[in-house]
Amino acid sequence: MTTREEAIEVCLRYEDAYEDHPFKNADWALIRHKSNDKMFAAFFEREGKTWMNLKAEPMTGDFWKNVFSAVVPAYHMNKEHWISVILDGSMTDEEIIPLIADSFYLTMPKKHKTMQ
Image (cartoon, rainbow, N blue to C red):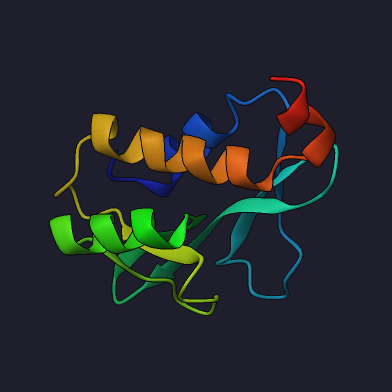
């Protein structure tokens, strides 16, 4: 997955997800939960590449930052709980999709978490 459109399409596969553009800067797109409006992914262009911010457990985020150069501390977000994934082609879909899934589950409404 190397394009914003591909990554957004993966995020929108989740039943509770929708795309939002709340900023005056059309460059930014947020993917949120319909049930609580919490963001689980943010897309933007930076340094000529598409970046995606995702929520991550601190230890998990640290692990991915050490494994992939395309995973860095989150741009414009809390650096302990969020990571940025640069969609530069250096990571496979199989490596990126679990990061999206983790972010989705970390931000979902609490009532849904207890039902699983």
